[in-house]
Length: 255
Image (tube, rainbow, N blue to C red; front, side):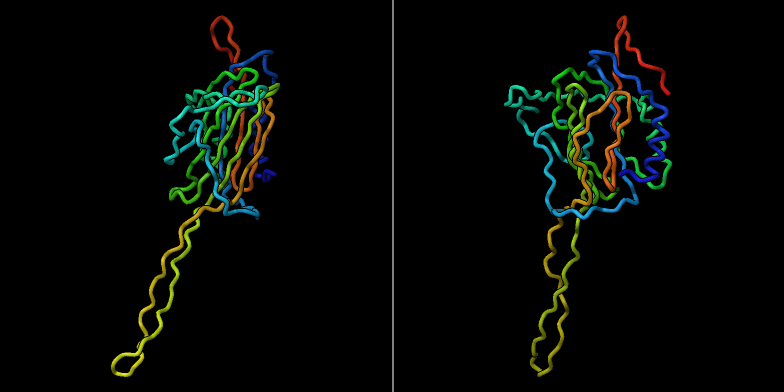
């Protein structure tokens, strides 16, 4: 569950967003995704923290500052099940931050010492019925050294409602200290036994541990702010339907 501080920030910002229902048949939406860290959050007691996080082999980079690249073949493959949505590649062209409804929440998080804003992106994309995005890949450093990373993927699907499927992991690089192993003392010609210097044993390989994870498939109502929670980080999602009249896009005046 969100902390009291998180709830206070989000509740105050929710009042700035309208809750009107989307126009019937609306397919063009503005998507807004905001990722943040809770600096005082405690890692979970996970049964399998050492299990490696597997990033999708195919997909679209959403928030990636690593060497991840989709595999050379086609970016997406059609589902084999005839009644399943076909994955498509969205065109993510980031909109100016000041045009986004979640900008107020972003500013509040930036001004709160208990949180760190990690990523904030908004773009427009058609979401017709039966549409599902290819995995939107996340592999993002949460600290300057890159020892802490948010890794995983998101998918957006349109059925009767929009759905967001999140699979994100807060991973930490575990770097074991060098083992110091004593060398046995050996006799020398004088008959004395001298201690020899200790030496460093080979370093154990570094590995990543999962501190917390967020795995959720959430139904999203348009023009409502949705919060997906993990103990050490969170994701805020907002969809705004866009209607076109006389060739011009019309949206309600920003709050």
